Image 1 (spheres, rainbow, N blue to C red):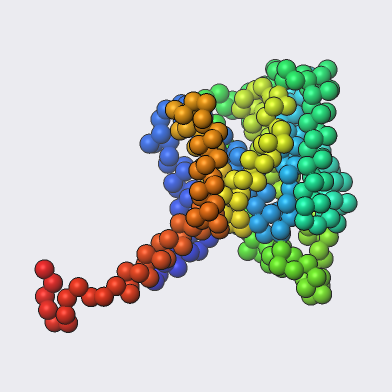
Image 2 (cartoon, rainbow, N blue to C red; image 1 turned 45 degrees about the horizontal axis):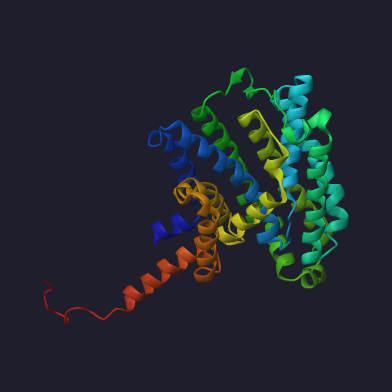
Length: 333
């Protein structure tokens, strides 16, 4: 029972997870696979923020690729045109994205259901058009080159192994912050809003403040991920921040398990790495990818992580209810 309590404790899970992923490069030494793990860590940061917004607050956003792109382009433009150091680019990206998210969030979060999704979708399309049309600044459809490599306090990150530890460190910091948010009074207020806005309002929850606050926080996660992505690839183009990428982010949250931080990371890891294994299907890769998602959602409608947990619970109860294989007092073979 002590072991079970230890495993169920979120901070114990976090410690085990941190040990696991920090030790992963001892097993994975291939630079290409380390690069895939860097992208998984970057996607996980975005999806954690989106899960706080969708899974815990019940607000659907189809525009998070735009915040991801804004974070990447703000630091990319400052670095390529004016040689700003990466940390200064991060500060600028977070400040500008927080201001934009607040301006967008105040009017749009008064909307409900698919109207909010449509509003965020429209914002994403507008930002995508700006990325394409401001060619002198963003490089237009051809993309932006000349972004400096990551350099923090004189340390340059120029290998996939170094990038792995950097991106995972940011992921762990974001995950720890998210666990604290979920377990705090703010997290309880978010779940109350998800359950019933009317009831939570009657109980004194400031619905508008919490909804806008978590929207801004999730946008900041996306901006942080965009900053990492821009300095990791050192080249960005609008094709990386399309509406389809927003849909893919939502799919990661839902397929992983809506309302579960661990499920969000699981979904991001699965949907980022799965195409790497499906390339053997050549032109049918997308078809197979969609088929796998459909099968998963039919048989595990609560998401993969909760589906696996349910399966283990069922097996546990089935084993406990199984009839004894020998009579009492009879020695088993």
